[in-house]
Image (tube, rainbow, N blue to C red; front, top):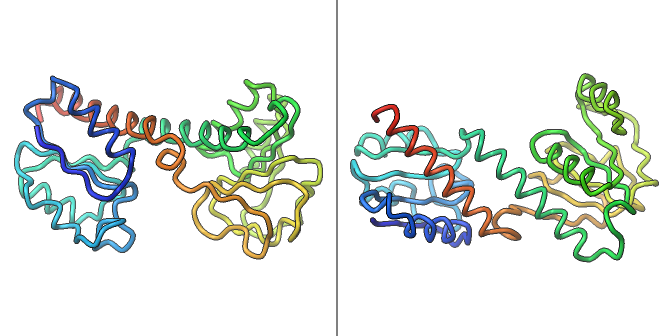
Length: 254
């Protein structure tokens, strides 16, 4: 077995360690690329290497693993006989990653808290994968939550289940009253600058990509939680995705 990792991500090193410890994979070779793999479509994130340089050893025994891989790169890898796993298309991986992100964010928040979740009120912007996990974990811990969503049907369903929810138009909308919240966690890549006061009383936590709190003070950004807070769990999610891909490929006879 050979394992090549690119970039300095700790979760890739964790995934590599798990792969080396799995005897069933001894005849396979792996190229592990960062998450996301590239920012400009040409160079591997966190390195000065071009994407195609990662394929110098790729052959029929190789599995290339990355995230949001450019089509031309994936096609080049397949042309060399390698198999390609793009984690951005693995729904189970995305769900596990969201779970890890939610847990890591709450670890960060409550490690500096003197109150238990049940003694706080937390607003969550967005009810996608991460938003759902945050709500589930906080409700399990008896926390009080309010969900802000742009989906009227989602808002209606949450309210039916007794969860405080407000529908916020995708564009525009009135300023939100968050004065009763202890924390406001954003999981949605959307401009919030017109929806929140410039100096909010609640603590702001950013989990989404982009500059969503332009001009608003006191934002704590938590980028790439599976890498920066829970890299071993992040690595295990990658390892599980690889094992799943290999098993499914073998079942298909590929």
